[in-house]
Length: 179
Ligand SMILES: [Zn+2]
Image (cartoon, rainbow, N blue to C red; front, side, top):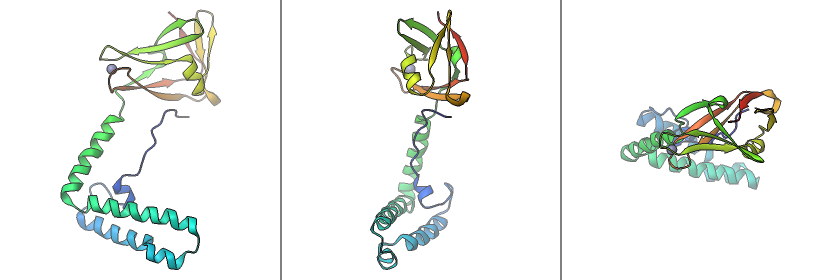
């Protein structure tokens, strides 16, 4: 089980079903064949089902938009830059295991923290973990984190101040001492 995964939207390259290093000719050829498949004129005559038409028309608009961007060398370069930047944004700075986290006991709730380079903290508490399917139970001086189906899980935690994130790996039945 993987928790906290980002929803991924299709890139214009995926919409046109071409590689990101495709040439202008390849993109154009793929655009033309896609457009033939999804053209509204064609849909009206071949399909009588309204709801299918709607998603097909949507797809047609996406293809048009993708072509507008990728079919033009200048806007394609800009889009490539944005694409790279957005991928860096969603990247994580570090992989951290549960044992690396500092645990603070604040009564009913346990707070798990990990210090960020900027000085602030990545944090998650036991309540949030339970909502994500990883309940914590106290055990003597420590605690045990459980995961559903005894599978390891990972969650992405943002820093409280900056844009860095860490990926926290949770192995089933990890014992962590509280201090
Ligand atoms: Zn930070």
